[in-house]
Amino acid sequence: MLETMDAPKPAPATAPPSVQALFPMLYNELRRLARSRLAAGGRHTLLDTASLVHEAYLRMQRDGGVALNDREHFLAYAATTMRSVVIDFVRRRNADRRGGGVEHVTLDTRAADELGASDDEILAVHDALETLAKVDPRLVSVVEMRYFAGLSDAEIAAALGLSDRTVRRDWERARLLLAEMLGK
Image 1 (cartoon, rainbow, N blue to C red):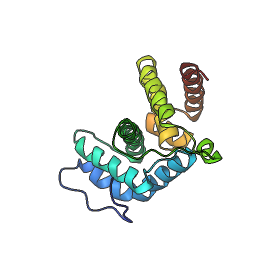
Image 2: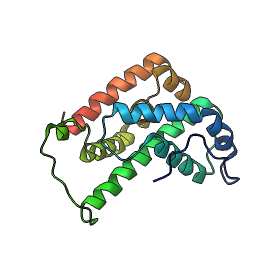
Image 3: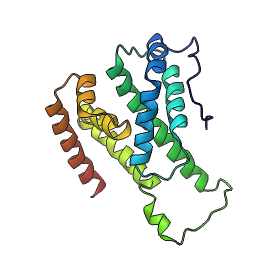
């Protein structure tokens, strides 16, 4: 996991120019989005705000061919990247649980019920989103930007070139389809 830092380090020369330009300007906003996402999700993870933002930056840096022209496109791409960071973190943690040599402690208090979404639930949502992407990729984009990055309907609409109303309809449709896929 990355160290917690107060400000971003300068972007290496290998980062795409759009990431180099936009990341420092939107760093505080990305931290706010990550903080709200991690807090609102109620997930009991060891992943913190700075780690999520910095890992997302490193992944965006590796994807050199991405052209991000403005704030909305950058935040949309960051939402997708943050989703992949969270999913990979959960998968690694689950792999460690299956024999990583970690001492297992049983929770026998109400704290276990208050932890929020379980790792299995996060992975089930991810699998459902992959299935949904085959039907309607735009719905997945709306879910990623709203659920994983905490963007507003207006921000999503600007990033996707849609109206606020279309984003709200897509969100409701995606929620219904995901609920059905997850059996809720």
